[in-house]
View (cartoon, rainbow, N blue to C red):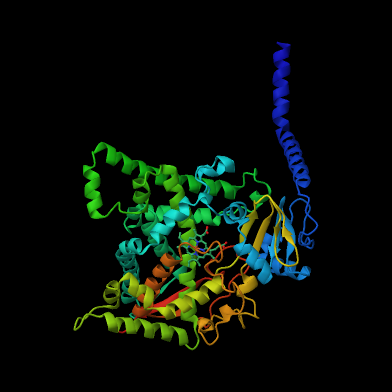
Length: 543
Ligand code: HEM
């Protein structure tokens, strides 16, 4: 009886003291983690670029690499004689590179591995169930080329020609909605406003889902379009750099990201099982009918027909959405914003001339076709050949808007030499390169923050002044694998939009803006502006 009383008393005491005990245990855990982290900073060879100490915190390393990347990086460059410098982020050692020689090593040296570099630092990449496995056990490591092989297939003319009518139809449906909103404007002005970073963002997600994912989800009426976009945006916004330092810490952001990833995963898996089930249970009959409707003639089905399992299909779709959507959507939005903000209207005028020329060439004789109807008849070859001015505008937009740093990891087993000065990226360490080192370098691109597509015309050819002076689509061993699709989608969207509408740049209250908002150059990936913008638009006179 006494012992029972004693136990009860102890329990009550314990319960009362639990906050103290929990705090004590947390401190112990933190101390343990900090001690082990301190010990784990690697020993660096003497020819490693010098440590940039100004922002180096014990244990945590250079947090400014995440909070104030652009300035941190440029101060790092200035702190070192060669322009290359070292820093730690948590226990990870990074070499920040600058200049031609280091840039060449970064993009061309095969010992520097891209996938392994991004795996640690791009914390927005959606996790898949494979990520929890040690590298050696990953059957579906993106490194083993299967992903690139499939993506390569989807970029072939045959595949793009098949997607073209669907892409054009999706673009026209969105623009016709915009046209309807302007015709129904309450004040009778025939004007309306739209946030391009919302409208176009959704459209590009739809196109990516259409061309590299599950075509039926891309239909405007499918609830899966909004759901998958929502999950995708949660994953994108839930960056948790703190987990790079403390990978075991369950941050709320990480939890949100994991939940959204799981939802996306199970939805893709359900679709996979549904298709497989249909094939097995109905003996092919129902599937055949769907194929005839063109419903399942998509990337998921292509992978399934090649015998890939649910996990591989899932990884392909998630990785493609991630690689394709953000960049394509941000570039096309900024391109339209730059055109809308132009003071003298020079480039919007040239783009319009180009489009009107195409309309004249392709309009059926004597027919009264709308802009959308004429452009819907263009072939893949025509889309790719007839809009060089839009391509110049896109190139200049990527120079200014593909921001942040690229990552590589040296997994070669040896130190990698960076150039003639003998500096190295040590084995196991990371290399990083700020794209602005070249893209906003005034000795290559004078007045670098000015949007000026004329820089690439043969008489100026600013991008040819140095090797690898233009990196908007990557370079060397890792050029962008989706460039052809991205250019096609952007050209179709810009040609239809500029062909159909007159437009101006405004703030969220509809007040005219005479220049594009500033880009936050410390952003880690391409993004919209910090200040919201709108496009005020109305239908052009029939062309
Ligand atoms: C305007 C749109 C796009 C831009 C500006 C862009 C830009 C880039 C850049 C700069 C890189 C090199 C990254 C580095 O070196 O660290 C890259 C690589 C890559 N891009 Fe794109 N990209 C775009 C659209 C797409 C699309 C639509 C896809 C299709 C899935 C795609 C798939 C990839 C892949 C898979 C890689 C890695 C290539 C490799 O592993 O060697 N991109 N992209």
